[in-house]
Amino acid sequence: MMTLVSGSWVLSSSASFQIQRSSVLSTDHPWMIITSGREALKGHCLSASSWPGSIRQPCSALSPSCPRASLQQEGRREGAAAEGPGGSSWRLCPQTPGQAGSQGWRGSSRFEAKFLLYSNRAEQGCLIEPGQEEALKQCPFNASLPLVMIIHGWSVDRTLERWIWKLAEELKTQLPDTNVIITDWLSLAHAHYPIAVQNTRDVGQEIARFLEWLEETVRFHRSKAHLVGYSLGAHVAGFAGSSMRGNGKIGRITGLDPAGPLFEGMSPTDRLSPDDADFVDAIHTFTQQHMGLSVGIKQPVAHFDFYPNGGTFQPGCHIMHVYSHIVQYGITGLSQTVKCAHERSVHLFIDSLRYSQKQITGYWCKNMEMFDKGRCLDCRAHRCNTLGYHIRKARIPGSQRLFLKTQPQMPFKVYHYQFKIHFIHEFQEPRIDPTFTISLTGNKDDVENLSITLIEGITQNKTYTFLVPLDIDIGELMMIKLKWEGTAIWENIWDTFQTIIPWRKGDRRPGLIVTSIRVKAGETQQKMTFCSQRVDNLHLYPGHEKMFVRCEVSSQKLR
Figure 1: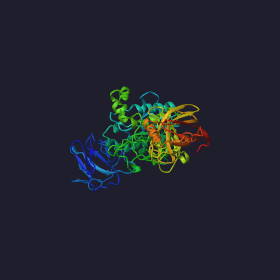
Figure 2: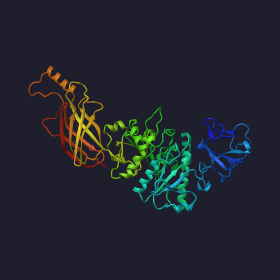
Figure 3: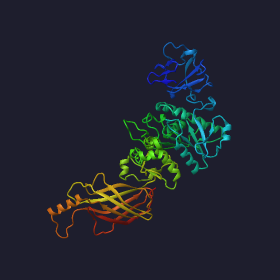
């Protein structure tokens, strides 16, 4: 095993032989270590871009061109060489463009990544070896059909997780005329996390060489490739896109909660970015930070970045659900709880395939706080889009951050409604904090007693906006019942107030005046206005309820 220490850049083998990369050496390009003279190491190389890791990637086809020189103390220039144990000769050579990482089918017949063509048989795949045209004939790869490539993330047990096969099966079931390939890079993903991070670029380059080989061999066009990467795999997909040679980009990359540690805040060339494919989308589900780090990356990395439930955490993934996870997964239930929010991105993508008639919509917003206030259900100018496989592939400058609510289990879809209520405050107190419930009647279904609490309270005569998410489709909204949930303390306040200042007959006690309620349905973009059923009594008191019916309807849908 060879390791590289940051700062001094020390490369050492298990035989106590070491080469020290001095700061005097150029760092403008990666380095390759070529060994000879020792049978176990002969013809192998290690890219500095993939440190630290084991000696890997045969490079016998490379012809080192840097001149030999003696290495007395430290490497002082290109071409430095040293004698290792057993007479091994080590030489440092700057890599030329195209040599970095894996050499593909022209430089090396060996790929660390394995490419498995999935064909509806659970946990099986037909191995396609780059450079082996016979494999394409034996495996049912159809170059005329689009390709979806699944790329897993960091591995702790060197096995392909169950979600990979679930996603592959769903893709093949819903999209039978599609090639589905699973990229198995477990040999490099099963390592200490910083090592696996460094390996992502090499694996991305291998995928790029694989796609180029398909182009050259069977005329498969890169524009028909859709890479779906989870966690570290999302950045692998990005590096694959940026490593493509020739004209054109990969058609699409989807990042499923792209990994955060060692990628957050990095430049676009060192992580997934919108430049890596013709279209890039990402789903962020676990960006909750601990000591400044989060499992999933928080910053936008795509053309459209979706943040379900704010992206920090997901419903149904709280530690309180650990018992149900243990029942479902056994002793591994605890780890399932830990990774629940991170992996939710995968299941949201599967949901978009399985429940295509219940597409989930995300809406542009500055942050989740604004979204919860119902101020962001606008679909004009690409301000909303569909989460998952069936996203609308609109090219926009920069990144668009989209927010939405979901349910804790499949189907995840939630229907978003924006409510605007204008309250006239008649109480002497400068602020009151009432709790309301609303019941909605639609032409398909009804929902009752949804609790509504205004975060800022009611302080003056103004319009308050809030979000109402529904887990069922009630159809077209026809009627609203608004109730002020009265408490004993409110009744006591009123009794005391009436004793101190007795009202004459016909006088009305103070309350809240509500004249109308305006509603906008996010999914249909329909706007509706509801007026009090009793126009002679617009007051609302604690413990009382009022009915509102549609009095003005604008069925015009926004573009």
